[in-house]
Length: 111
Length: 112
Image 1 (cartoon, each protein chain N blue to C red):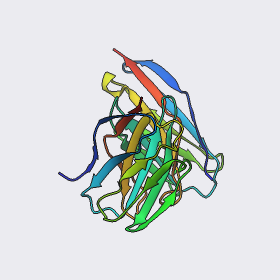
Image 2 (image 1 turned 90 degrees about the horizontal axis):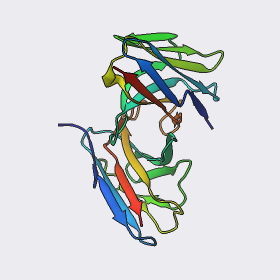
Image 3 (image 1 turned 60 degrees about the vertical axis):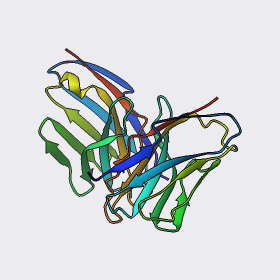
């Protein structure tokens, strides 16, 4: 089955700086790669996703890149703000029920 | 408002008791999922269901049971056979043909 590794486990940046979180996956058949943001005591919320036929996707300050050959994908947050502080999860999968999550990255943005 | 609801938010049970966690969605999604979240770990899949009256085991199904009698409901029972039941439990749903999963607010279960 799919195995997803996520790094780093914690990340601290100054407000305005960029943050990058990286994930690797094992199943070359995976074709869907979402990123979720989880605030304390709440369920995760999808912030951006990418499919295997696309190499990069942007949504305002957030971007995701995918390297299928190397089987890794990354989340990039630019101009970070204190409200970006949360736990971020990557996931990979290819069909319903087959999605697996990384262990999460706790991002802290210092004002 | 469309969404997923989980109740209760906090649940306390004595060791050896079965407990059922509720998950309801009004998004008309066919697929529903249960995950367990422990500190420092990602979400681990317990069970999932793609249609009514059908469900499959995930990676950590031992000690748990589910039912899917209605499209909008997917309750999870944590049985006394689950060795370490204290955790944060998350329910999610998705359209059958689309991967994006929508999560509920979670239930924090503490077994004393």
